[in-house]
Length: 619
Figure (cartoon, rainbow, N blue to C red):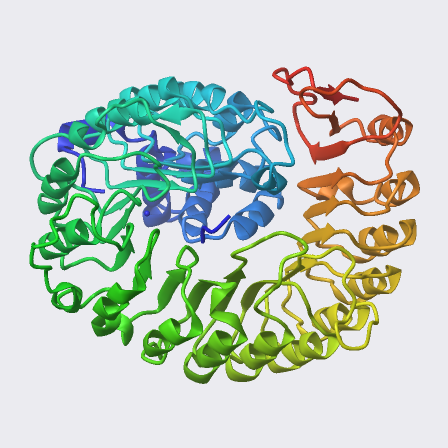
């Protein structure tokens, strides 16, 4: 859960692999028409192709539109804008792989060079979705192989990717440069080996929080010989040993390498060797940050601090998978320049953190375990005045554990880090006063995710529900787009969200609310709501029906362990035929009663999918 873009082709390759461009073979006509005026040249072109001239001009204008939202808005102006916007879109983002068929997407957008594709909903990360649910990349890669031979970049999140898919990707796109797989599964080291062997222009290979099967294949050695174009190599999630000698040779012949994140099988001694080969790194994941078990006791240890000091461009540091705190002094030389520090795998104390954090005045992103306690967070607040994002994860996520961070740490952060824009905070106790203070001290918050791990926990001082705290967040943080609520909450909290959360796009709810009115307040009051995730809350069919006016505008709705019935879900399916309504049960569970275990609803241009497993019923 702790997460967090090519060399030019040869001239011949460029002619063969570049996407067709109407601009290239129509712009001359346009220029002739404009240059000749009304009294000379080719007046027949002016009268015969006026729309074509306007489209050429529009193409040039739309090339400057970068954001997806602006492009989507432009495509709705009229049919001409719809057509030209599609012709000029080089990056295609699809937030749900089942919302549109690959064939429809490739038919409309014909010049795509980069694809961003998402599959399973986020709650799949919490084991709330059975294995083999779907989100297969295969139909997409097959469609792209025919439509986009010039494709350069693929970003996938929560998709099922096979070794065959990786092979197809490598074989179909001769100029392929970037592959990012986030929270994906289905592939192994043999697939990686095939992929890196054939992608000779590869610049980015980022494997982030993905599950990679150990096929006992030496994939690192499969990178082609000669100078590498690699700019980013991330494999910290790969849970199997790698060929370090091959990795060292690869790093040495990658002069453009800026980002390198290592897995826990890379020792601190091996890290030292890599740093001496690549002092140009800007982003580093350290691997284990402990010595190798096979290192001889009599061996003289390298000067790790000197190796770090040589990395003068280093601004982002992560890793520390199996940390020995005695080695932390090695990173002191780079602390002053760091803008991002990730200790979310490092079980360190406040005393071990203080010498580091006190030297990080430029820090903007900080991820850490709650082992640093409130005292550690107070140290962060005292130094990191530029902090924009904070995530505090639990060492022990059990509901009955003793949480070492509390409202004390949260209040300290709000008072010391007033530029904060995003926070994820796991704790066992919290007060309304601390949350209200954060809403007042950090009004620029865009993301506020407070996870009180014990169910239905009230204000730890007053015993009151946490309604007023979350109410203050949505009232005072005018830029808020993402909110996660927890603790003892009544319908009053959801009333606040409906009244004041007008920009909220993503809402996550767990163990909260006391009637259908709570969900009704949200669905009727939050016009920008795109993603709604609810688990273990008392919302039933009446609450579900209250969103009929809005579901076509949402990307998805997820409800698990609530009070929905099959009949209520069928009513929604009948009322909204362009909405896919999936009822999901455990893979080994028979359908016993009318209560729905999990509901997953999403809009789709294609209707029900054809690859649904037996434990999924599409209504």
